[in-house]
Amino acid sequence: MKYGIAIFPSKEVQDIANSYRKRYDPHYSLIPPHVTLKEAFEADDDYIQELIGELRLIASETKPFPLIIKKISSFSPVTNTVYLKVEPVEELMELNEKLHQGKFTKERTYAYVPHITIGQKLSDDEHSDVYGSLRMQSFDIEEQVDRFQLLYQLENGAWTVYETFKFGGVK
Image (tube, rainbow, N blue to C red; front, side):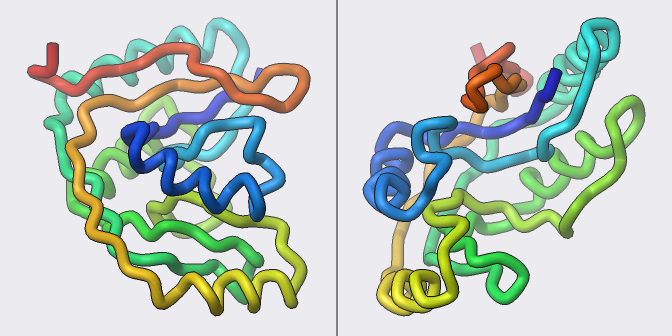
């Protein structure tokens, strides 16, 4: 089965992202707006149970940290993806690093850039128009993150939460 690990921001941030995603993201109906911590990977039942133990330990050692969004950016020319840029605070980067050590698969397709996708699989012209019109917008979003989710992919391509892991000291 295919799994992934992500942070879901508050409803307010998801509403902002979805205001763009419903027009520009073909995956809009498959998963809510999120910050990917570990991209999709394959795992069987035994392996995922091992990883859940690791995820509980990592969560218990992680303190809540700020999720900060100031602007929109793009992965062009690598891909025509437009996103809300999540500031790479130290705690977020450390959490991502921990999910690529030990029992976890270490492979990465790209260097880690924390973000919330708002548009993808755009044609060159669409990307130019969308990014050109949005990149001057600024945001002043800051909220506390106190958990992450292990997700799995359903047969129809949609993602759903398998388990939520709250950070240490969070009730």
